[in-house]
Structures are given as structure tokens and as C-alpha cells.
Image 1: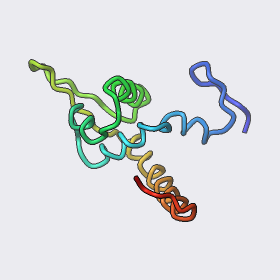
Image 2: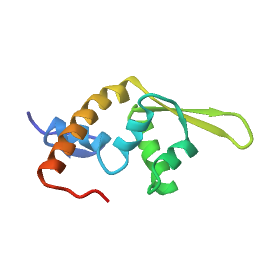
Image 3: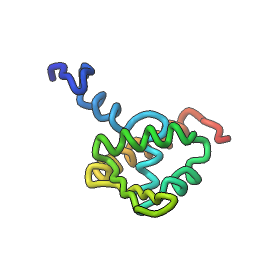
Image 4: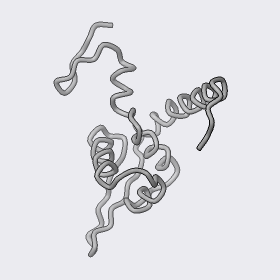
Length: 115
């Protein structure tokens, strides 16, 4: 497949493009938590204890911009915001599940010690 450009970035493989959308430390973790339920920002934050507020907000904005999550704002004081996974996000869960299974197998093979 020839290289292609998206948002001024050159990609050399569709897998690279997909990983750029859902990869990194936090995006898969966020999508995984949203796969079966809608969560408020604070609930997401509590479920991922090591993520900073700045990083969570940033990752949620990127996931929303790419169509993996939907944000709903309720006009209350203080504002209530909920995040829901979209159809595109559900499609990504299938891939994340496969990567997770492979990761668990790889961890076992490489004798990774859990913290």
C-alpha cells in the first residue's frame, strides 16, 4: 500500500494509522472502561488512578475528535459531563481485546512479574 497523509502526517501502513488513533498509554484503557457503560469524567479518573487530569482531558478530546467516544454535557452547576463509547469505539474494542490477549500471552512467555 502506498503511503498516505492524514492531518499533515505521513503514514506508511494502515496499522500505523489505527494505532495512532487508539494507541498510547491511556486511550485503550479509557475505551476499555467505556465499553459497557457510560461514565462521568470523575468516574473515569477514579478507575485509572495514575492518569493526570490534564492527560485524561487530552485523551478524551482526541478520542471524541476521532469519533471513538461521545461527550454529553448536562447544563447543571457544576456541569455534569458523561462519556459514551460510539460504534467506532466498539469496533476498536474487538482489536483492543485481541491485543490484550496477545499481551497476556507475551507477558506469560517472557515471565513478566506483576507489581
